[in-house]
Image (tube, rainbow, N blue to C red; front, side, top):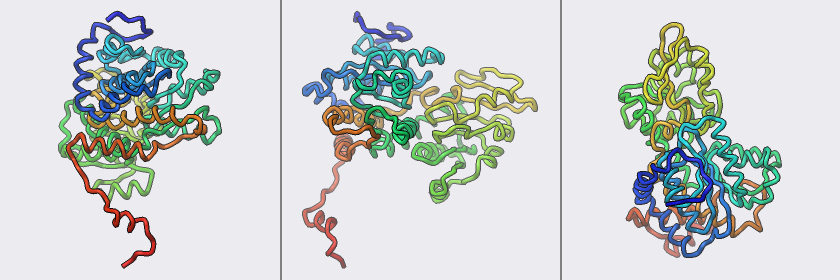
Length: 422
């Protein structure tokens, strides 16, 4: 269809394939579809501009469709240079009327130019996966802060940045930490990232994981998911941690727990999942065996010291699509997947739609909630309200054909009492 939207995508002729894939994902996202149907009737977002900086995937497309159905004027840019699905970007522009600024493999300058384009939309609501739009608004576009009612944040890394802003008294508007919702992090981070990370590593390398020593750095919800799926593929999983409680949990879950210094010398495949920088350093790379594979599933490409890897190498070449080979002076070869960016999106398709259904249901309902409650919200980072979490869980169970028990009046009274004992 003809469009007068502002956009920057790779090729609009890819739209038909994008539509097919968006529709395929939509069949796996019944909760979001139910919300979209209600939004279309009630128009809770009418008159509001939304600037979203998210991974431009089929699942995100269905979120954008839902926001638009609710009356929002939506612009979308990528939250990672390698995560865009170009056919989806084209379909959103050509078929669904969403302004998209995203091209897979865009360079750093283009990436930030696209974020600026999203901010140019003068949003009333922001949606981030990594706090990049909010970062721009709080740095050199502060004059727009007064226009923003609220924001939402999808991922752990972004929430950390926003809580730092709040602690410094510099957060310009309220933000909902979507990642804090139990129907997000317990499922998206664990089951979604777990499966899609393994998918990305295997797609990129075609390596057999069975019998390999697979090192997972970090045992948060994402690390738990990756470790669980790697073990399911037959790998011997080693966990590295800085948090004693998480390290203890990993040990009790049956994984070997080592400091990275020791794991570096024996690991075959490494995957960072911490949200912090310099987790795999030059010193670790100097200890790694020939053929070790490095990957990252944390939000930013700072967990592996890529600059140090380049400095160590005497020769670099592309070994496979999205796999760079670094030959060191002693002849050892180390392999880096997807430039150290999110491996599940750089080398695969991201989370399965069935789990993103809950994550993006949280986004849509949080957007509605902040508009309804804008007058009472402070410039703070808020968790997703419990009633939203519970409703999404209820709807998800219903769509899966699962029913559960309910407390009787007597049971509810017992749980709320103090005077009934043995």
